[in-house]
Length: 251
Image (cartoon, rainbow, N blue to C red; front, side, top):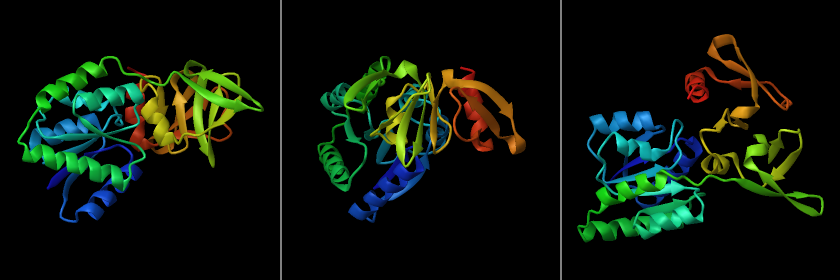
């Protein structure tokens, strides 16, 4: 069986690849793609695989944008951290999904569904992709977080957040400088946040566009960011990521 993995997080890709080969060492992973643009180019020059594992959020946009440019007729298993109502929509439309973090049991269940569908010779994917596009018109991004403040629970609106950062634990930093620990990884957060408003600068920080007060051209093609409130260390966008970051800022 040939499998295509479209996933922008290297750790998630390696985990999925390891699980698939543990289940069936004969699986041929034909490629690993990380963006909408890269995926469109791949489909335009390659034959479709037997199965696609597709992340909802990619490095440059949401993955359903792929289907606006190319025809994809093979089965798709979505890997996502979308909230419950979106997951239910996929389920009702018979699009399988795996909720992150991915486990071997999840993948075994999904592959069993895939094998059943192949044996029945059903091919409902054109309609399902169209349904996915319709769902994507009203994406449901996280609007608030419930955090602990002493013996109180505090509701924080996403619009009040300047950035998230990881330092052993993950923290929310508000516009007023207050910070709170939360039980999310940055990988989970980037799936839940609106990609128009939030960007993962590096492995340590996800930043709101409203928190960027200054951008400085730096050595070797890097960009140096000044955040409000000030972060406790220098914040850089790598040379490899700078073009995409500038495109995000300029949309």
